[in-house]
Length: 149
Image (cartoon, rainbow, N blue to C red):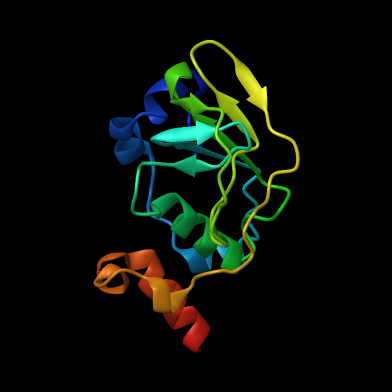
């Protein structure tokens, strides 16, 4: 489906996504050789090295891992973190192997380009998933089935 330009603003909203979008599986993404060049995330806070923290659950990192496993995102994919200026902290943090750092931080006051960010390449750490995630997250089940075949 091609969305007319005057509908882009609506299509970018949750209601518009449900109206104009359609479900696409990981397998379809892989078969179409889709490459995502930019991912956008909100978060509880960011440090100046682009590490996200404070929101919990790790869903963005899980999304990155799933898309990485099927080669839809790569180390070249840019990650943009959107936060309020007060959520940008000048604190040193040590990330986990699965943490996906932001290449850019966008606040209400400035844009910060982060140099030398690290993108994870560990994929899904199946043994580290919280109880019930595999059963509750359809794309995670799909990826597991794809890998088991």
